[in-house]
Image 1 (cartoon, rainbow, N blue to C red):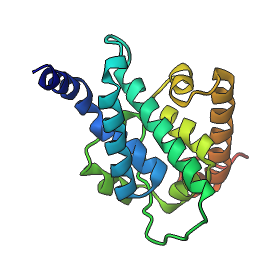
Image 2 (image 1 turned 30 degrees about the vertical axis):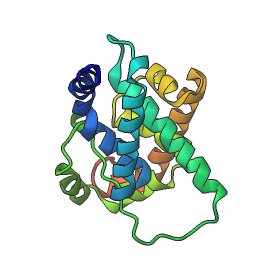
Image 3 (image 1 turned 180 degrees about the horizontal axis):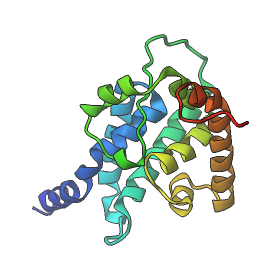
Amino acid sequence: MAKAAKRKEFEDIVLGYADALYNMALKLTKERSTAEDLVQETYEKAYKNFHQFEKGTNIKAWLFTIMTNTYINQYRRKSREPAVLDFTTMDSGDADKETTYFSLDDIDAMKEKLGDEPKRALEKLAPEYRMVFLLSTFEGFSYKEIAEITGCPLGTVMSRLFRAREFMKNELSNYARSEGILRYRN
């Protein structure tokens, strides 16, 4: 009976973050099936370690920490393996801060709205910069929360986020002007 109660408590507290986790996983992995696997593995690890979660603390940050560590470990594992080209990878959908949480059905609609240039710029970011950029810009985490999630010092997070923003600004300045988002300076 205790196991059933634990499962119910876990589901009540944690399952509401599925869309946010999937959104972030898709942005990191750029592939639906890999993102789904990452979210599933995150939930498995969260359930296994649910006894370590302190009630009253930030459950979202705890889940993102598990997912980030899982992704980093997978990335390290893959970097040791020989490279294989995969021409079936998908572009990631992006959203502004107002739409951090969205349903899985909204991903395709968002991909339609986002131009190719922003997608390419985001994909060019090194993984460590992309991670902090996504956690801040699209998930709304603070510097401190990102530091906790990634296990990096606060200064490193701030530096990476600054560099990621500068990179995105440089990559997208011509695109923003052509779309009428920025005007040329006289």
